[in-house]
Image (cartoon, rainbow over all chains, first blue to last red; front, side, top):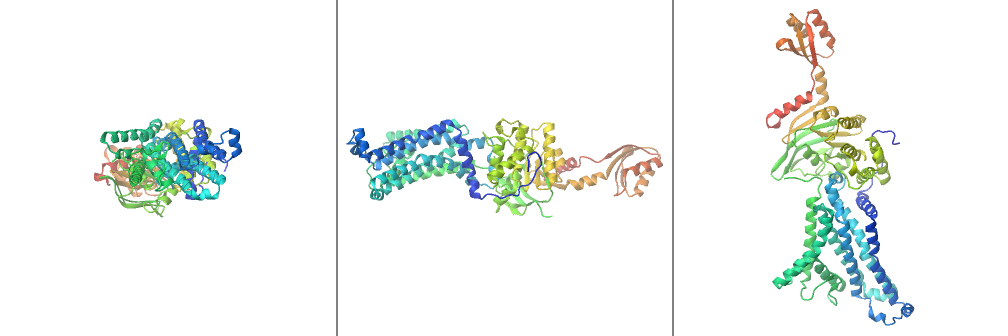
Length: 300
Length: 310
């Protein structure tokens, strides 16, 4: 109907499936984020480290390139092993934290501030779908920053080293994938929970860092004052580092975590406690989201 | 006629407070008004029908779908215009309505087309590319109506649609609602504390007070009845003969002080006939009023009734 016929008419066309509807939120959110020049530059910049890693892998396997650089002994200086891949993930995960602190607070707080939730939830669209839609925005961006470059580097190394190397080091690939997803899940849930409770975006972003760094400092103070190691339960990077070591190496530990996610010597806590603490953190975030993501706020 | 909204012992509690107290009603009208003072439970009823609050007892059915067990199907039938400012920040008007239409299930291309149409329909065609956050209050109300109708719902919930509007904007909003109602493609539930809005747009009224149904009436029938109800003020010596003569024509009369008479005309009797009888009896009809503000009467009666029930 032409727009000049200013009249109401019912809609009689086809409807999309609920699965496609779930993708509407991330599609709009990603289009919105693309318009931010700072975010675009940051996102592009986050691929510098993986590119350097890919270059190292390439140079390591190319004798003529090494000859050109005049560093024949370099092969023994940098080895492509578990530390290499954990450090790649560590760097990228730290950048993902910055991204989550920048993007996360803008996901839910504007909807709450402008009462948009009642509009979303008055449609055939559930609270869970809303949260998953918002989470998927962060998950897509952080995946592209963490496990995707990690697996690409693994693929490159495997291609250059041979099938046998890939088979022997398959745990590096699975470790990269699952470790990154644990980090992504924690960051996304925390960013959304803070976004739901703190309406001022800069404060919510700042609080993201607070949860990681201030809580870690608090844990260190507890460890120092009480002469215990249980203060590490407040140190999220410590907990994540412990879990990563297990995912990358299993029971044969040769490292104490990745850069930024290192387990301080003598302060290690049982692995099940780390899993438990991370699980509790996720549950707290989910509870915070469940309290706030509602069509209307109930004043009892 | 199948009810559009059927309340079946619907009870809603917030903690220990009972907000809606076992409501029972079958609303069949094309446009239903929801009236009541502040805190009567109007918005809670709408929010419960939308699935935002869980009933603590009873249930409700919308176009045959149970709100407890078929919440998703219910919401796919509804368009909702909330009372408060509601929009997605940083989006242009047409972008905002398109997003809402897509979430309601329209494919992206159809959603965009309908968003443009809805914006022109509510009179915001010229500003559809401006950010919704920069709209005036009247424009925001119109944008909320646009997002509520863009996906072509079967039932439209309008929560205080004229809130904060100046008289011309209010008249425009009422006109839009009447147009939508008169097309007959959807049903309306209009919640308001303004009797005039409800009287202008609705043919049935549900009045709530303290979480109870205080009154439920068919305005169309009331209006029809009121057209036969007259109040006269007469002067003359033969008042008694005049009353006798009109009673012989089938009128019901109730004489009052100082020549005032209330009477109900039978079907088929024109007012002109009263003047003719008055002239024959040498009685002057100084004033003749049709009964008006029936809704106000009903509302006031409902508010005065003890424990919120007529």
